[in-house]
Length: 115
Image (cartoon, rainbow, N blue to C red; front, side, top):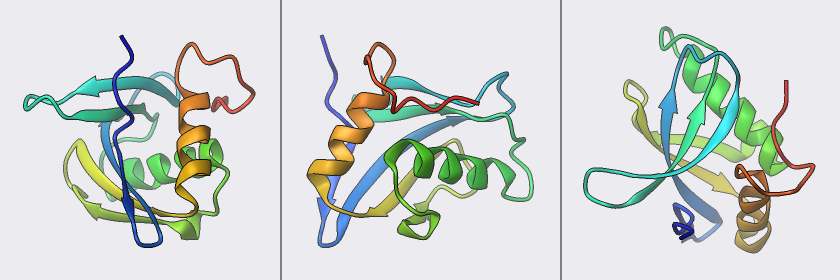
């Protein structure tokens, strides 16, 4: 069963709930996971360590690549010091949803992040 995408519409784009794994072997979108409260989050792995904002920068860069948006379209709203983050992404919601769905594991698409 496919879990809902962890996105909510805003006036100029979406809010995206993310769970980050820093210091991973590879940078990638790992899928959708449920929080303890049952809400979905996008699970993202980055190779950067969670110090001096490096992991946050790596998450934004990975998502900018995957969602085909400029880095300037991303704002870290909550969770700068934790694994659970809320991002605001400027853009058209239908396009952002399609790009994210295509980047999920198992999606046959060129939208996946590869390094």
